[in-house]
Length: 345
Image 1: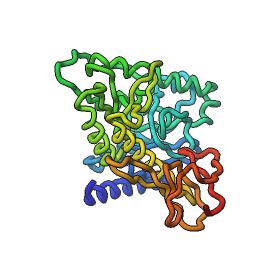
Image 2: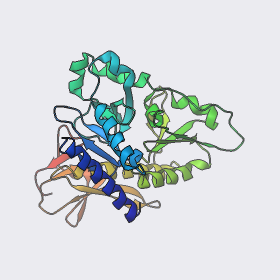
Image 3: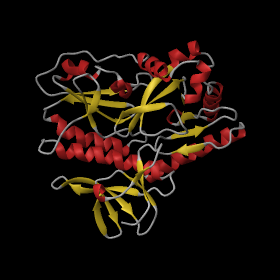
Image 4: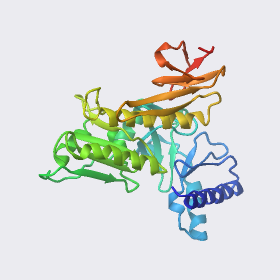
């Protein structure tokens, strides 16, 4: 993203935050990665996510009207019967506050949001008591609200890539959470479906073993790197039970290097976002090449107490150590997980 565009987006975010402050909502902050403003209305326990993309190009009156609509719909419905039809599952790497979530895929969790016309609100564990329902029921209801639709058509003689682009209501990337859904695309792509979800609104699917698949790794990585709503550069398939899993490519597999690279790019980015808000968190970077293979390398400054991310190796001062050679203590309740190193190796 160019400098001019970043500055324009930051200016828009500041305008929104000023409006929220005048409306009596302090503490709003800009999430540049998602091009969103996060805020919590005094008295509310849930964080509201305000997408800023709909405000681009709006006039002053439209701008004010949009914010007014958001503030009117910020609260979660008090009754389960009203809330249930509005629930949707979402795949995310991280979310503000402490929303209700459960592990879904490596470095990704399943969250539940209330889908308002102009914004979304994450459901928190505290909301379960208000609705008098279990977490399993909330997750199950949210999944059941997905349309479960597929594009219909006959496979051609040539390999194809099907691109699902979210219109704001489809939640295509969330469909990866539905058991058996990805398999239903077999006829559309002409083979075992392989899916990419590089950003929240885009799902790319092609058949395994086609000539298009290697290039799709590069395309997904590019979208992931450039998007303000990036999700994952990894590839996914269904296992024998219909559950979505990372594309398996062990050493010796023709796609081992791009699969390994995508896995580690996601790990580096998720740990980077966590480190920005976690004191003492060590950085991690991607090292290697397609020829020699890709690795993650955690950076440990000399004699510095540190929270280490899971990595292939650790650069401790001027020494490179294998992760397995370190004596570490896991830190509870951190996602993604980290380990505490109490002494210099």
